[in-house]
Image (cartoon, rainbow, N blue to C red; front, top):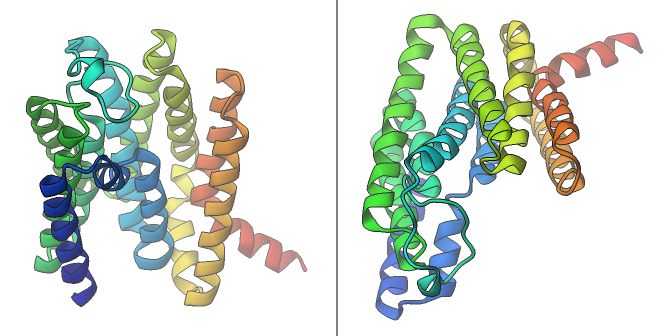
Length: 279
């Protein structure tokens, strides 16, 4: 609880300071909190150290939100502010803001699930800080970030409703397949094809491994914190290596490697148990 309130206070201080100084450096620092792949990393922390069910539910929500964001941007085709005003690199149309949308999806999903005041407070502060930073960097308008927050809230709440009504396995399968389908369309239409190929692969990999979710979660819960932390570091290391090594590879190879990564994220506890029992 104290950590949440302390982090929230720090973010408020940074946001106010960035606004007073109009510092592009501070705005960029706050904007980094809204990166899509940063939230995929945070979902792994949730999955391996907090709750496997919550982690996978939030992960598929983030994947779906990221895929949907790319599609909405290009379908709507609403431009960003003039490029000469930008204070950070940006590409593609502006509405809805991807940083604001994915950030809101993650934090609303977590808040709805945990229903704790300090988590809700931190969630709101993070989203507002990220949204404000995108305006401060002049790569998005107020309307862009408002739309991003609105779509993010819709995806976050919907994903948690699906989890409660369908169960973790079916909800994860549904959202993973939806994310993969949208990302496939994005790749075909050349809508941010590199990122879309990665999201496509992750969606397919998680959909393929959905029958293993229950057993994987049960196995993970039997492990000590030390062993779960080791598995987390292993999966994060493999995820980072996959992202770096496939940065400039053909789209089909990027999709295939990320499919394997998606499967690995879910099945690592079962792989560990199988290897352990074989010796």
